[in-house]
Amino acid sequence: MQRAAVAAGTAPALLPGERPRLLAGLETLAGSLVEMAYARGWCEGRHYHRKASLIYIVVGDHWATHSLGGDTCRARTVRYLPAGEPHETYFPLGSTCLQIELSPSILRLAAEQGPAIKLPGEVPDRRAAGLGARLHLEMFTRDDLSHLAVEALTLQLLLCAERGESSSRRATPPWVLKVGEMLREELNRRFVLQGIARAVGRHPVQVSRQFHHHFGCTMSEYVRRARVARAQWLLRYRDDEISEVALACGFADQSHFTTSFRRLAGVPPHRYRLAFRRSD
Image (cartoon, rainbow, N blue to C red; front, side, top):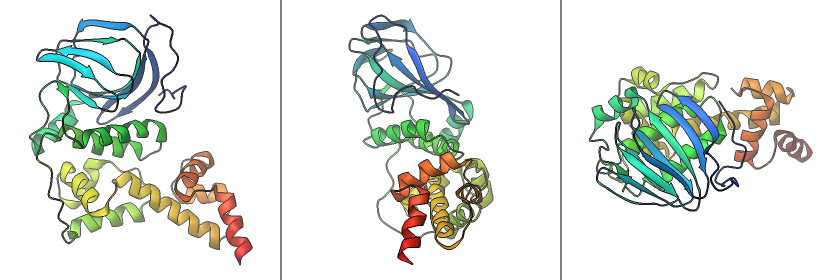
């Protein structure tokens, strides 16, 4: 696993003609994710990949062809390439892309729920850009919930060909509430999407979709919020060391805890504790 040398969403300054540069990588059950930077003027001749892939274009418009034609690949769009699809790309201004080489298991899960994306080219659904951006964010979040998030987001992208669910709000089914309770009560557990689905007797796609529909966030974000909420209580009412609070709330280490806490609470843990101690 490599960490990007540049901030998420920016393009590194590659020299014209420089070979593509790997910025970050992540292995998940959904597939292999890599963020690649392409130099101005780089061209990839006609080739194909053994596995199907999704490509989220972070920055930099470029050109691409495939068996059904070709078009401009614009920043903040998502493209799909079936396995064995011949294509070529040209990067006149340079580009940074997140590429997801899809595992057979994630393709099977999507096909079971179907209809899934099959044709090469841009994913036309208006939800695709937001899903691609959230996948890219997971490359830089890098906690024990990122794998769960990547699985769920990839399934949603593959099923963008399907008619969107009704936006009407209904009573939350008991099994969805059970998922929320599992995630909230076992903050130190490393969850896997298929394991959650088996626990409630539902299909992984259904779990991912219905949880987001009723809770308004992904399961991974729900756990992150629950971990920080528990940490806030411990920081306010107990005298544990911050490193102990981090471990008690399911964080891998104090550094990761501080980053996540600051992102959600707006201040680092020690400042949060001091603020409440002064208000007593």
